[in-house]
Length: 343
Image (tube, rainbow, N blue to C red):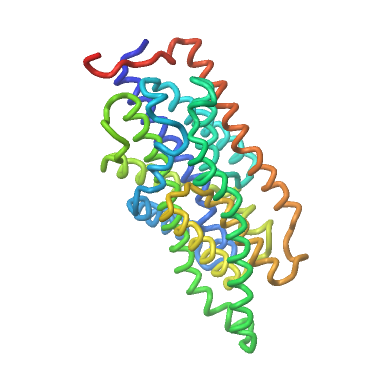
């Protein structure tokens, strides 16, 4: 059994790597539409998203608390640091796989699936917090994409009605500037929800390793996660930008504004509720809703279908990967239970 502190440091490093890949993987959520509509250059858009992801990460900790105590029962897994390591490993493998093929899957649900899979591998299905999973994970999993679609559809219809007498060129020119604000709102809300997920997993690791008496998120954890996500965002995820910004629906500035604003409102609301939703799901369906308000044939539904397949597979596949990683860690003696200090 390796030194417990060394193992904990390893878990924190892997968690920050996951946060980095999350930022790189999900950069498209905030900037795909603004790049597609050529309102900002890719470089400028990425810099803006990185800074605002950093800022958003410091707003609240409700999502972090859900990750730390609302998926598995913390007391049932205390002492098994390999569990959090396997959860992160499963999520990172799934993130990298979907990033490689350009599918906008959910980093959030990869982490949640990984945590569930490793907990079950350790002590069975009794480790899962079923009521919280139903309320804070599964229900938002279904409702957030629906809310994104309906919000995008309704907002685009409202804008179309409000500006029906204006020239398309004039409307597009006005919304080119407004889209900078909507993209900034989207980037901030992304940091507000997504960075907290890694905060939650690191805080859980500290609790499991007997370094914290409860699941209160330390300031240094907030700072480290915010910086890791911002650096990942700065790297960009250009394959996913291409899928989000070009393949689903041909966007103009007004469409980008409607999609970003509606998605950011849904994500912010979920963050205040403490639900770790998928920003990818929400912005993707908001884009679909905006496109459908024009006409159903404007949306490339085949691409949307591929995205849905990735979404459906994320929870079980990341859980399976985490389970396999946990078993492999067991083979090298890393799944032993650590006693509390003084025991």
